[in-house]
Image 1 (cartoon, rainbow over the protein chains, first blue to last red):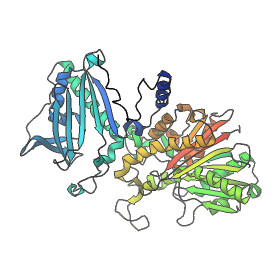
Image 2 (cartoon, chains in turn yellow, red):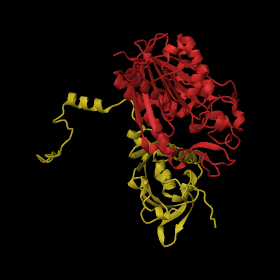
Image 3 (cartoon, rainbow over the protein chains, first blue to last red):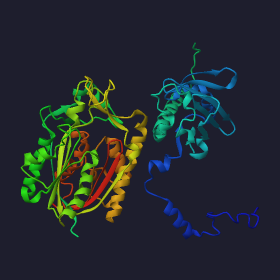
Amino acid sequence: MKTLVPGTLDGIDGLVRCERFDRPALGERISELTHTVYSHDQVYGEYCTIHRHIACPPLELFRYLQDPYSLLEWTYSVRALRPVPGDDELLVGVDAASTPIYVKTVSHEDALTVDYHCAWDQGRELWMIYLYRIVPAELVLKRPGSVVIWTNCRHPYYAKNPFPELDSDPQRTWVGEWWPLFYGGHSVELDNLKAIVEHRAVRGIPLGPRLLEAP
Amino acid sequence: MTPLSLLGVASSLPEEIVPNDFFGPNVAEHRGMFTAPHERRHLRRDQTASALIAGAAERLITKLDLERARDIDLLFTNVALPDQAFTGCGAEVARMLGIRPRRVIDLHNTGCVSFVTMLDLAGVLLRESGARGALLCCAQTAGGRVFAQEGVRHEAHAPVPGDGAGVGYVALSELSPVLSVVTRCQPEFASDMVAEASDGRRYWEPGTSPITLKFTEQRVAAIMHRGNAVVPEMVTEACTAAGVRARELELLVTNQPNPIFLRNWREALELPREKHHDTFDRYGNLFGAAIPINLEDALAAGKLPGGGLVALGGFSHAGDYAAAAVLDWRRS
């Protein structure tokens, strides 16, 4: 058994622990925090997290996500990815028709996490970070397949393009303008991912991505 | 202090019914912001907003048995695209109705929520002047005047608006008291809706390309986001000011830009569909005329057999104004 060093939490305000909040006091607190309806902003204002069950073994799904060229298949608009000369880890493609998008994939097989570190226009500061965690559905839902959890955090650059001089198209809408629609947009893409992966997994064919060399 | 009461509403729709195929093929398949109604009405070129308003007002005068010279001291109008540049429709409406109100106010702003703005202003003016009653007149004319034009009617948003006029009569009375009115101006959205022509000319400059109404492309997501949130916020605020809860509302009547906003507003207020009455599928986006037209339609549909709490709410343009009111409807 372990116990805490006496006084170790002293001076930290706002903690809710059973020694100072009995059950009725906790009940008051959590019922106050529980609403029937939450506004879109309360749920998706600063962090946008969505999740799906995908009928595909976790490790296979991980390998598919780990390959950044899979983005060509399941994203709405990331296309034409190619390596950036002189950088082994960085790819560049186009997003939203003609915007350069830079992508670096950071993955950890033990944790089943795949993170795409991205940015529009430049590859030096990758601030649009798409975080994915795969959880074996057997563990959390007692059913086969994977649970995918996808989170974006509202980086301050979403509010204002930090490199306006790199934007050659005055008509372009800055990516951050779409933050209020990220829940919808990301849901569409996660459904694409689910449809593609399940289509192939159910038929027992390799997940892909299916790629050709292009000029 | 005698409260302001909304004593009745009446509407008038142009007779010309415009089906979806007028706007091109597959219009009914649009979803989201550009969901097309099944049909809508358009004003013809030779029809005026003033006449449409006067038609609705005549019905209301008859319905409420108003004595014109005695009962109507104040006349408000809001017309999406008025019959004439410069003059507004108020005096012409007064001429058609044969009335000489002490004050005529052609309200230029607050479009889709102008009916609630008029309620607010009428309360102040009637109390201060000791006047007897006010006609609140809202007309939407952009359907026939803008969105039926060649070069505009094939645009994705052209099928959504429809024309119509709705008129309310208010007086200081205990009969159907207005319990609260809240209004808000959001200047950050002031320049996000524009009337523009494809050749870049100003609307007063000569040219051949038609004028259309648009949201600035960059702001579409922000406008939708704001629109989703602001109407439930205002209705909740109006309920709080009236000392009631949104869930106690018997009827919610709003402007009707598209079915997505309507769905999101009633979901946020936790109201079942049948308590949020709209006429979108028949009449389209009626701009400011929607609130009085929908209220009359709800009453005609028997939505308030025993009276009850009614909330009126909406926002205008790209979100520059928002407002809501709660009234205790007691009239059969």
